[in-house]
Length: 606
Image (cartoon, rainbow, N blue to C red; front, side):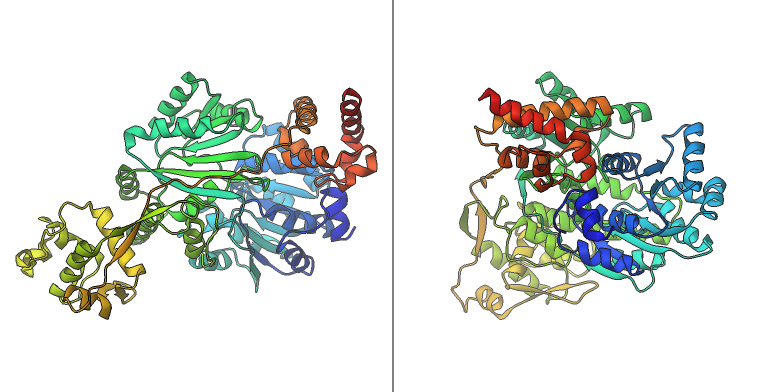
């Protein structure tokens, strides 16, 4: 089969998404590839389709058991011979899978990175024709990424043990330029075809609700009340908060489960499966949960605490709406989140790093935290801010809390003059931290007293402002072109001419800043037409029954999107189902008669 036949007959899709076809062509032609594609963009097909076309076996290195299970279950449902090798298998199951691999019974095998070093796997690998090694979640190889895993550093060594070097491909949803360079270097990619399909997720609504810590539980309950019987993940910063929030929500009548590293492996697996299989609708977790989760119908992600960097937030929030349907991503922010993240950074330890490396990583973590705070405090388009961070630029998304909100204009001239005056009084030779310390009248910055800045007029002139608020106001004045940052490594603050004229009285221009006064309104097109709802309910019931019999998550059988298309197109013959997205020949043979029977029974009941 060619790529179009595989796309339609195996996976049930008519056309490729952006970037997929180019990547597939490059792999088939023998090129290494680095693909940066947002969650929900169809990364898996980019390597699964070539894997079915190339002559040998494809090894997919994946970091999490849950991810492997989802991918393998989906492939088997589509008629593809696939398996996984990880710690969830018994000794007998593992030996059987290795034996089947050696016999060539699998086309795609998913492997935990730690397994690449075992004698048994290396022995089998030397006997089989490996056409491609795929590194999923490839950002894990970089110490500068948000989820570094030392085991990923062994992948290149494994490839080098093979008699014939296979094609090596790497995929991830988020990677800065530094992380991308690490991926190429540490995985030993050879002249890779690199593609970034874009980070924008048009179906996601982003918003930040700034609130007091004590009010976060109430805000969470308000958010959940707006979304009935849909899948929701709530991320918390600590295990203690996970336990507390899970208990409260269960008492309030929400079907809630929990996940964090303090639970036993058995309970974590059981709770995760309860969520994946829709036995529980609300899942409260630390960031230990979620990488590679393929559940497509998550309608809301709530961050109860602010993550420590943009990469983590964008990947975690990106688990919403993988099916392309509208979904919400809400951050509940309070200033106490900053202290929590600083505590985590200060107490970071890694036995694989020396003291200097650890110091550098902590310094970078603090810079990344500043970017996260800017996101929470900013008035600009949320999605634009994140895309700018990853090097992609849009005017605005038109669909986030800031884009849809109303703002009051506040006269900030008096406060701005104090900031401008402080920069002038210190001869425009300091950065944001020093200027903020002087304005707040800090007693702990020895440099202030050494230079005599405790005697200048600006000292303590803005002591009633919080440090975070003051930093953000200065950054807003930078954005408004009153102040500019000079230098790269340790940038200092300098005034544009207009700011100099304002503080010296030569200009009467007012400095205006914006303050959000109303919440953006989220419009969802995710509703089923009232006339289609009875059929939709029948198909969901059928899907649940099939999934239960086959012991797989419901979305593995059909996605919500597929069921909605059936409701709209109302197929009455088997061949009509091939026009429905997600219906390949294998699923047609398995479930086609049941679907058509259900649709016809619906018509007869009208």
